[in-house]
Amino acid sequence: MPPPDRSPRRSVGNGRGGDPPVSLGDALAWLDRHVNLEAIERGVAGRAAAPTLERIAALCSAMGDPERAYPVVHVTGTNGKGSTTRICSTLLGAQGLSVGTYTSPHLERLNERMARDGEPISDAELEEELAALAALESFLVERDSWAVPPTWFELVTATAYRWFADNAVEAAVVEVGLGGRYDATNVADGAVAVVTNVELDHMAILGSTRVEIAGEKAGIVKPGSVLVLGERDPEVAQVFLDEARAVGAREVWRRGEDFECVANRPAHGGRLLDLRTPGGAYDEVFLPLFGPHQGDNAAAALAAAEALLGTALAADVVEDACAAVTVPGRLEVVGRRPLVLLDGAHNPAGAASLATALGDDFAAVSRVVVVAGCLRGRDPAELLGALGRERIALVVACAPTSPRALAAADVADAARALGLACDVAGSVTDALRRALDDVGPDDLVLVTGSLYVVGEARTAARRLGCSRS
Figure (spheres, rainbow, N blue to C red):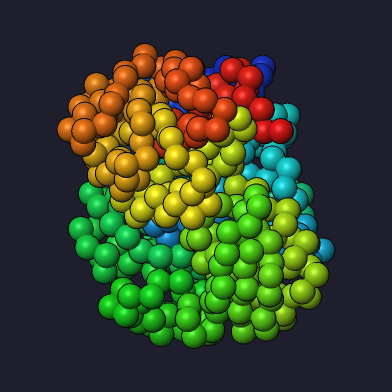
């Protein structure tokens, strides 16, 4: 296998030349001129092209196929894939492996998307990797006469795969960005394919039914791989079983048959789990994450780690690893007295899981003030309704700084239609400040509706002096 390309740093431009990079800001500005949903709506990039893996494959090939330098655990699903990715990475790291982790989206900084042994890529490394990609893109666009340059996500994915290879990771756990079959991450052939669940989301892109959406997600199952299948619905699960058989997957491990969270109890600061996998039983494992759904994610992550390693993990390794897991923006506590909770639930299934967690892990809190903001295409009434109107004392509506943001006034209208008291704030920071002014020390401020809102609130919480102690 040829080593990854070590091209010298060259100019960062628009894919056809440009000014040399003098800072990470220049490299990020180059990146942001490429097509993604944000750039399309800002009018600074062209329209999205038809789905294909050709461009990401060409980029990776020119770099010596870094995605083949280490085994990959590939994780897809409508909800829970980010948590499952992080738990699996922590388990593999506790086993002594150097592990690359690729997740999306980021909350505050692009660096969050790629980490080695739990540490995000540094600014200097990110600038260097992006500069190399810019030079390579310019060469490929000219050589191959590409009508459509690589997308933003393709370039970021290529950056992660190259950086992992440059640092000789021994395994990578990679979260799918959207769908699976044509997602840029799928240029890698995962040794393990993990499916958390399939719900209705991104229907305009992935399909109008759960079966159609499953067909897109099933594309990550590769020849010789182990499929860790978390979806229980027989009709939907059959899509993955058919794909596994068609491509020649080595094994299929199914939730409820081969792995399971058999007990799941609230504990101080998280959950206490009993987990079962093909490798054995792991009882009273503490996971410092809130919500019963994290038990399902932990079971899938543990099964995936065993599938990659080809062996069971020692009980003490599982206990130590699970106790060290963090998942920013998913039922994350960023303040106490008052309790400030961030959760990026943005679809009905995610909102339902959030509502269950509020009732299970935060049952003692009787008064909740919700900071809510959404992207267009989401139904704020559906999200707020799932949380339960009885406990919500006030909704502070806001809009994230995204061209795809739903107007705060529309969120407020939805809240009032449900009979909820509502204020409108001019920004996420103002909304969080308004919520903090309204609550007492024993109340709860919940920020939800979009990871964009959660990311901004995470930054604002530090500025406003929220304390986790």
